[in-house]
Every structure is written in structure tokens, then in C-alpha cells.
Length: 72
Image (tube, rainbow, N blue to C red; front, side):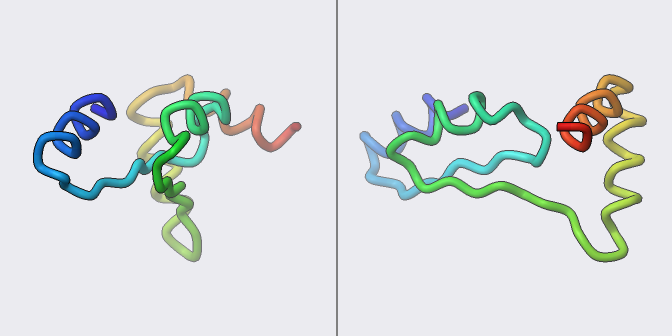
């Protein structure tokens, strides 16, 4: 998707930014965002728990990712 956004930018000069969810490995976030504006989505307030449950329900491994981030 990042490569497609870059092609559109080159062809049409369409501005773009890169957005990543919290929990994506740091190296996976910084590598594609080099030279681009980037944002990280962070759920907060009273909605974070329902967001977390949805992500774990979608993919059980997300629970492991979350625990690793907390334990570090």
C-alpha cells in the first residue's frame, strides 16, 4: 500500500501520510515511514478496552503482542 501511495504521489503529486496501529513492531513502523509524515493510532479513554477486545477476537496473537509491549 505504501508503494502504491508513493506511485500516486509521483504521478499526481497527491499528498499522503503513513498511519500505523499501536502494537506494530517499531522496525516495521519506521522503515516505511522514512521520509514521510507518519502517525501512530493510539486508542485511549473509555474506548480502549473495547478496541483491545476486538483486536484480540480478530487475531488471538494480538494478546501476545500486547503482553510483550507491556512487559518490556
